[in-house]
Image 1: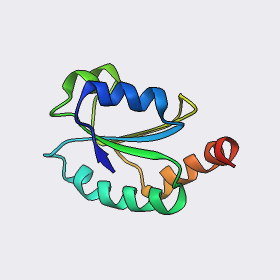
Image 2: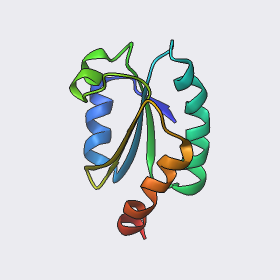
Image 3: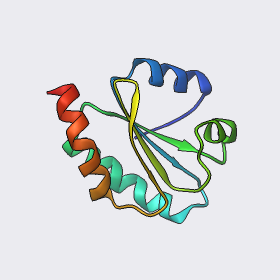
Length: 109
């Protein structure tokens, strides 16, 4: 999972990635830090065509506010430029994978 470095990188990913999973988190969010490697590994195994990015909301506060992130962690899934799923605060990796399954199969298979 890439860590977002700049607003330009964000714009490029949003415009060019056919599928994108965004994990919004923070360095001081323990749940975010535990979730990040587990989610990344599961996505790489099950949905290899999706790009994955981690957005540190402590660093990119304006972007997180613009995206409507009010609590952490948040996972947002974009397929074909459209948000197809969003999970906030209490969710499992399995729930995220289940939610991605149908739009992924329609778009990529």
